[in-house]
Image (cartoon, rainbow, N blue to C red):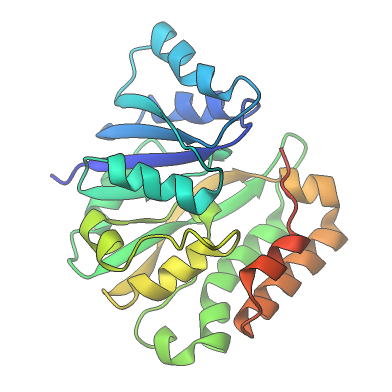
Length: 250
């Protein structure tokens, strides 16, 4: 059976990383390894994996890797370079996954020409963001259909970080991995490259991602920002400009 390496880029994620790692500790079957790639956190992020390891019998080897440069693309590439599994799974620190995630990924990739991701349900302590979750689901399909129709028919689906993207390690490196120069939309760029290796599949299973950005911005502002970034990206606006709209929220 193919081994799954889970890669988590972090930067000041102490408020949510422990919950995510606890969830990963009960995966059945377990992941081959969990790599927390930290970009220089100033909080307790890097101590959390060691604390959990001391209190629990983890189902996978968990390691903390320090990146000399902060940035999701750089950190995820570093994790991919370090990983020893056959499959790479990129997970955000604020996203919770089903306990059979590894089996779902392995079954999905039993097709030799496929990569994939999950349906993201956005939720917080106070509510579930059903409208945003529905839009994110539809965006997986309508964005490539609108902006890259020639690739849509070949199997392009635009998957984003909170959808827990996974692919074979060989496919990841043969298409060049994440573009380290991109401060945003790096996952969409990876999808554009992965489709050259085969189609992308949105798995009919749910992962739960934090609504902290929507809670901070408010629904109206968040909707406007997400739509603006998506359409501007579709029309070719550089990612460095788009990043100006997308502040980091912790």
